[in-house]
Length: 152
Image 1: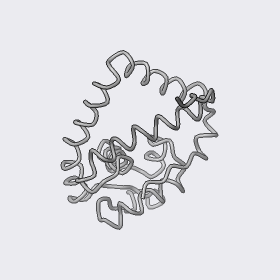
Image 2: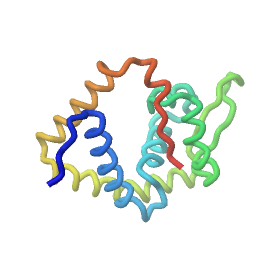
Image 3: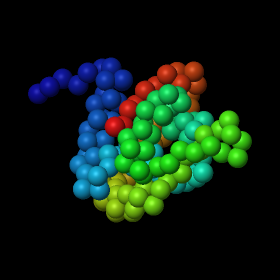
């Protein structure tokens, strides 16, 4: 039997990889990865959304967000344009982006239900509480600016 490492970081990263893999497999037929799906959903919730606002919501620095948006732009799922204030770049979903969300959403819901069933209501609540607490209390805001999670 393999020994569980004591390192909290290692254990959280291992769990995140396993769950991300489950979601990626579940929504693969939609043509999206779960990270792309979540970014498209964030755009949909806020559109038109300024790059800086979207970066804040996704807890990514602007450079990383730009890299993450690039494959979505290449696939014509999102469109970048100047806002009313020309100094601000805004992101909107294209019709193809809306269709991609609609294709992936039922698959994502199935994955969500599977994780809930496997972990149970109590562990899901604990996981969500741990994630919220770690994000808010343990990680200094400056560190989040350097967090890099690429999606494409």
